Amino acid sequence: MKKAIVGKKIGMTQIFTEDGRLVPVTVIEAGPCTVVQTKTVESDGYAAVQVGFGEMTEKRAEKLHTKAELGHYKKAGVEAKRVLREFRFDDCASYKVGDVITVEQFAAGDKIDVTGTSKGHGYTGAIQRWNQHTGPMAHGSKYHRGVGSLSANSDPSRVFKNKHMSGHYGVDRVTVQNLEVVSVDVERNLLLVKGAVPGANKGLLIIRDTVK
Image 1 (cartoon, rainbow, N blue to C red):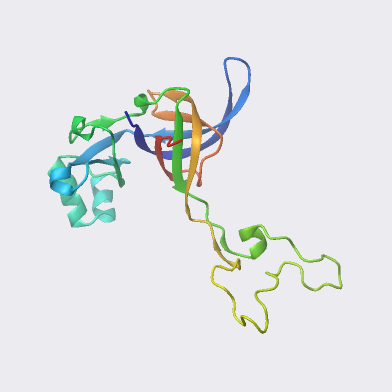
Image 2 (cartoon, rainbow, N blue to C red):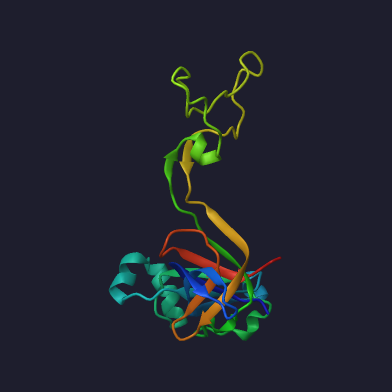
């Protein structure tokens, strides 16, 4: 059965395993997620489960959501959540509106894919953005961190599309595959995942079974 959950990155730390190894881990607050809607092939053309994550007060919900979104939650009889996401499980029929998906479905040793939004770095040069090499750093060079040659002068006399240049760096959807679950804390809804995951602390994460 496919497993998936929405979570929030808490930060990184390190723990000792039973055999004495020191392992770097990312702590993720995963769930609980409430089922807001179930989609079927007959009504929507595909089968999926829509879940909400993140508690907030009624006043805050009125500020962050539109009337249509609030009506969607009201129709389901579920308190408004911060985010909505859809998952396609093997058996969507087993989920009902109001069901709660918790971190309990995962176990130590599971392999997962984690999707998040990478950190933003603003407007950066080609060296930081594309890992290009610097120019000669001697005093006479006078060209140290530039992008370098852009194109030939006479032919084609233009810069090709997708040329590595300066620009906005970061805030991209990034997926890190085949990460290992080191530990699961069901009482506190925590997942300890070996290694780093995309994004800054408090960033939204999607945790799924690995596709590899």
